[in-house]
Image 1 (cartoon, rainbow, N blue to C red):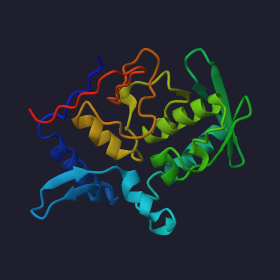
Image 2 (image 1 turned 135 degrees about the horizontal axis):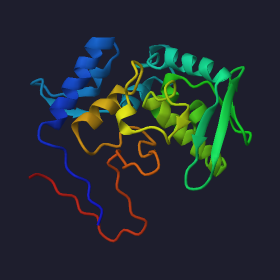
Image 3 (image 1 turned 90 degrees about the horizontal axis):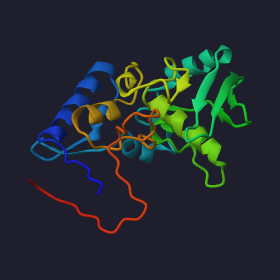
Length: 223
């Protein structure tokens, strides 16, 4: 039996308050993720991907378009002269990458162009597009890179995901504050694609539950 715990009482309000506070702190539209009713009460809180999607054909108007820009530039400069080591886990080995020109290239030949903020948030756009025909080792690299950017680990941890812990996540100024606030207030909430990436031996902090052969799915509503 796999069980996902309910949100604690008041969690949605605390998430809304946290995002509103973050918008006041950095000027990014985190508060626009909070959907309110006519009385001003919180109805629900949506993810950045939902707010960004209608603007994909208008990138200059896209919310959150610059959240990670300076951070991405710093990452690209760091790994021109430093090795980035990604453990594919499950006995698949470690891949070492360096930036040359605009490409982050790993031994084994897989390369990633410099991402944009929307690529980080969606984890399935630009260099992070999950193409069905891509080899499994590239998909494993993609997942760990995307998680590292969302959790702002790329400048502080050249070895990933091993060598990190949940206490290291979301410590950068540029980070996925939606994910930070959700995880700070509830044990559930798969807050970005690949939120289940974790160091070997560490618990899954995404709140996800899965079963390869499910026989019953039960949803309980209310106390």
